[in-house]
Picture 1 (cartoon, rainbow, N blue to C red):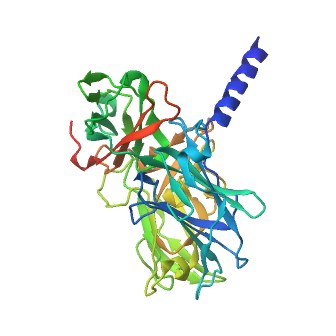
Picture 2 (picture 1 turned 90 degrees about the horizontal axis):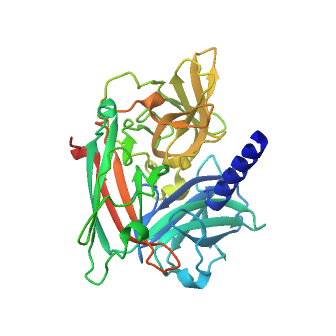
Picture 3 (picture 1 turned 180 degrees about the vertical axis):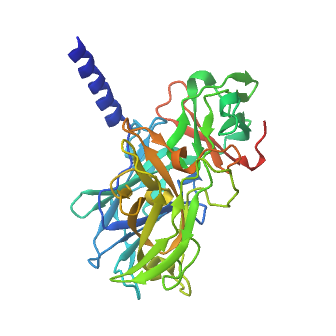
Length: 415
């Protein structure tokens, strides 16, 4: 009987893993994947239907390889939608990325590729969840990224409050929100069955809260005021550095060294979980490529080896990672820190393009559970960005539309 239960549990886990699409990064030469819509920093794109989407990435060689893009449509829960390609896409995909330039006057040779959608060949017809996949000329997947497209049919008003649980009142933040239809020709039909929501903290899909149903329905208003279900750990302000001038020190950089390429050594970081909260403006985990005295950072910014170091006793059963939007909040061997017994520090070296970066240290335990506050700390005062996305599938409909989008910050947090 025990073996049967284990087999069933494994099959369920395998089914869930295969049914929900995951973002991928499979080529070590592809770097600095910047994905955005109406922002200057790279972050999860959430754009209205008809707005422009920008994708940019580098390949660290001089081969001028060919790359192709494919766009797919997904349901609220990131399972594949039933729409045919022609129903969500006007024109074609599986086309070559034709806009690229080679780096200029850099130690690290690379090619910079750019793609924008809509373009002459590709336009999106409907709202919803999307995934863009980039393939090489051998039809092998290089990387993929998620994005969302919404229609302005409902308004979402957010209020960020301290946790209603006394035990968490100093460390967590709760999101209350109200959804109200903005279009007189649009009404929610049976909203407890047809409406779904996702709450994002700092554009991180990996910590999103989803699947909540409205608690109260008053006319054309859907009200969400949960006690625990919409609560996030407050976290702490992101750490940051800027290395737009590789020949000198900048924000967060202690010193630099030129070897085969430049090396940027950051100041030693400490465990902030036991310290008091200190306000430190950040860009909520995002990054932006910048370079001093150059006109085109896309091809004139160089790459440097960035050295991270954290003063922390060895955690034998836990792993420490450096993450942020610059690596899509990934948890893999590329951003896994190693403990150095000689220095008593955790250390990591990453090759990153010149720019301004937010980052934080996170812990994953032996049960593969993520704890963002173990090193950084959790404080209710932390300034965080929150987004609520509203999905709607009317009775008999074949896909999940995104009909509303709202955004707020915890700068005006209340009890």
